[in-house]
Amino acid sequence: MSKTFDKSPRVHKAINWNRPTNAYNQTFHDKNIEQMWTHTEYIPSKDRNVWDRLDPAIQEVYKKVLGGLTLLDTKQATIGMPLISQVVEDLHQKVVLSFMGMMETIHALSYSTIFTTLLTDTETDEVFDWVEENPYLQFKAEHITHYYENITDSKSLYLAMVASVFLESFLFYSGFFLPLWLAGGGLEGKAKMVASGEIINKIIADESIHGVYVGLLAQEEYKKLTVEEQKEVDYEVEALMKELMENEIKYTEDLYAPIGLDHEVKNYLIYNANKAMMNLGKTPIYEEKKINPIVENGLSTETKTHDFFSTKGAGYILAKHRALTDADFEFVIDTEWD
Image (cartoon, rainbow, N blue to C red; front, side, top):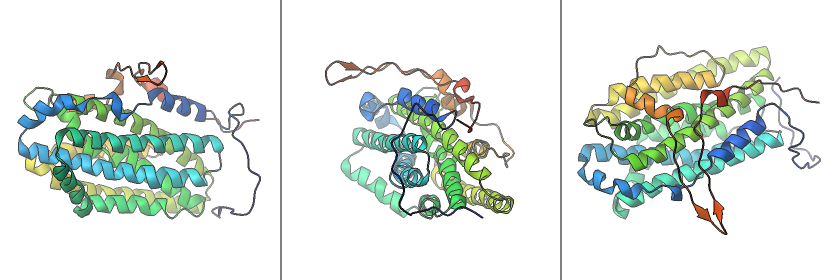
């Protein structure tokens, strides 16, 4: 039977980082710290002149994808990560999840920084009105939130973690496509909105870590389930992915068809959906098609180094962040510790 969480009185413990509970919590904690950044370290005002010369149709899509991303980051920061971290028992996992939740607030704030730079207050308000009215965006926010708000036992915790991985590794990426495409030179062969694209690159680097980490936690939680429960969640995981994909395709058509990019974004959806399944230790369910090479290059954090130095307080200097490599995600998973 799936374990129901015990709410009876218990001994309160302090976290002891000298006694690791698995082989990777410390690694992910350190990687998150290493990558830490804030919205003030980037200057999207550099894009102002480029923005004014963009086709209004592209401007419209750009505004809306950032609005949609803001909604999803808000959900992850205020509901997803807090509720999952509240019920996991491992104190080290709680800390890592809490830090990730904090970074989701930075992501949401970064989009607002771009809005403040490029749009009037009235235009920004119109974007957020659209966020509340778009049925496809509301659909995915509601479905993911449902799993977060209904954690009662190990089975529902596993499904909440699945929902989190689907959000971090799949649902965000339809919104990332246009900024990556523009910054990579997809329009007229010239890089556009590069400063804003740098912010997107930092967010993608964070989401990559979040998806892998929560995916590992989900795999551990899966092992706690009975064989029958595993069969039940296997069915639900695949059904949820297909339901989200159907909605994501409609969302993509709604946004990207007016600028002729919807078919390329759909290929990109499949790529990221399969990545989300693999983060859960599962077999991809879609036959992949070639994705736009400009956007594929934008996904590679190995090619991105960004030197930024920021004085904070009495002489504190934020050092250069090292780019991620595939080796950063190679772990020997051992959950048995003395």
